[in-house]
Length: 55
Image 1 (tube, one colour):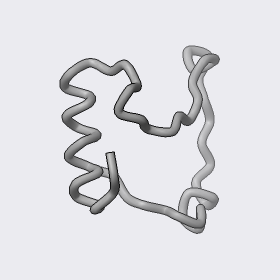
Image 2 (cartoon, one colour; image 1 turned 180 degrees about the vertical axis):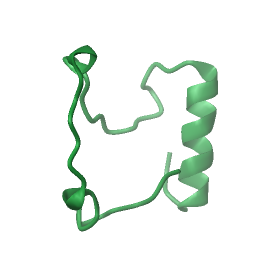
Image 3 (tube, helix red, strand yellow; image 1 turned 135 degrees about the horizontal axis):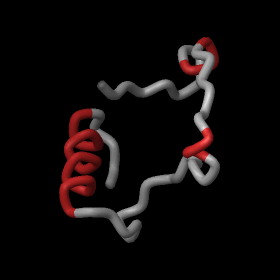
Image 4 (cartoon, one colour; image 1 turned 30 degrees about the vertical axis):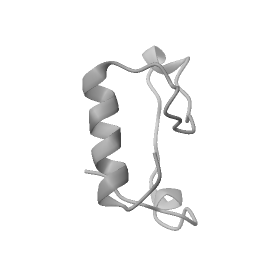
């Protein structure tokens, strides 16, 4: 699933607990120059199209 939560209204209600394998996890702004596996870039391109977002 994917959804857009511009003002953090919904995500603020979710209690997320990172496991010990997530020590280097972080949010990242998407950019066409971001090095990704081809399938991941395609997934993000499709989500951007679905939400009429720029990629």
